[in-house]
Image 1 (tube, rainbow, N blue to C red):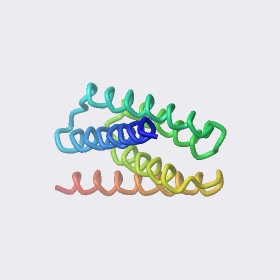
Image 2: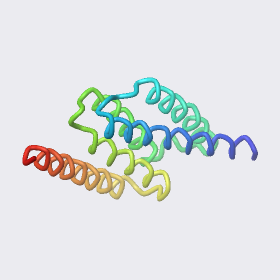
Image 3: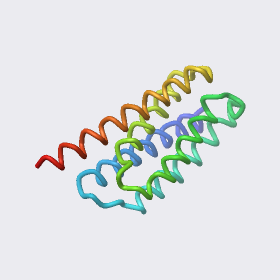
Length: 130
């Protein structure tokens, strides 16, 4: 039981590191690749361990969350996607907490993308006005 608690704690730390990286990127306009690498390795190692413990690899929310993390990594090459990546990260957190069925998982993801795109558009429009 203590190993599971440590793995869960490590998983939370990995997610915090991911959001710290996004905050640095937002404030400094610079991507800290080392921080993202540590966050991803921590999330993957602990997430795979936790999913194996309960046999969750077949569950829709786990597969979608993993896919969203991969998508966040791919989008990371595009600075304009910062808010979309942050929204996707929050969607992953929600999926891990609620563990919804596929349909609701996809709705949550769609709403997250819409919010991320809206904030990105608003932020860009605001910068152009000043």
